[in-house]
Image (cartoon, rainbow, N blue to C red):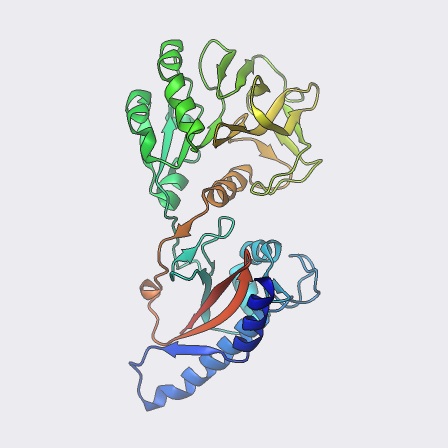
Length: 356
C-alpha cells in the first residue's frame, strides 16, 4: 500500500496543476505569470524537507513540510506558528497565500487542529458538533474560541439543557462548571454515559461543590488557601495533541486536581510540584476520552496556555474543516496549485492559493 502511494507520488510530482481566475485582460498576463512562477516555487519548497532538514522556527532557512513525500506533522505545526510576513520573505513572494489539504472526497482535512496555513484574512472552522458550558462569565476564557472555531452551542449555567442534548455532540467542554451537589448527583450519569459512548469531554477547574466528586472514573478535588508556590505545577508527561514538554512550569490560580479512581489509561501530564496531585491529566472512560485541567488561566513558562489548549482541542476533534473561501480577501488574480503528499498512508492533495 505505502509502496503504491510512493510510486504514484513520484509520477504525479512531475506535473504541477494550475488553475486561475480568468477575469483579466492582456496587460494583466505578465503579473499572472509572476504569480504562477511564485506558486510553483512555493509549492515545490513545501513538498520537500526544508533547510536545514530538521529545521524549527529558530533555525529555518527554507520552509518544507514533507520528508520523502510524506507530510511531517511537526514541520507543519512549526510552519503554522511562524509569523505570516516572515514566511512570505522565506518564500520570496509579495503575494498572499493559503495552503490546505483535502482528502479523496475533496473535504478540507483537519490535520492535528490545522485547517490550513497562510493569510490571516482567510478564516477557518471545523466540522464538528460541540457544546461549551460555563457557570461564571469571569471564568469563560474559551467561550469565544469555541464559538468562532467550532460554532459551539453555548450553555450558561444550564446543565439540565446540556444534559438533554449531549447525544448531539462529539465534543463537550466544561469550563469551571462548579455544579451544585444536587446538579452533580442528578446529571453525573448523563455525563458518564456521554463519555462511555465515545464523547470527548474536557473539564477545567472545579467540577462541583463539596469535593471530592467521583465521576468518569476519577475523583475531582480542590484545596483552598494555597500559596503561589504551592499552586505551581511541572509538566511531566507528553501528549500527541497538547504541545507541552517535560520540565515546563505552570502556575494555576486555584488548586484543582484529579485522582484516578477506576479510569483506564490514566496519564498525568502535569503535577503540583510540592505534591503528587494531578493538575493536568487524561484518561479513557468507556469509549470516550477525558482531559482535565486545573484551570485554563494558568501562567505558562513556554507561552500562552489558553492558546495551547485551543490548539489541542482543535486537534482532538479530528475530522474535517469547512471549505476554504478566499473571496473575501479582495483578490484580483488567483493561481491554484495542486501537489500530492502521503498522510496517514493515504494520498492527500496539498492545495496552494496564491493571489494578488
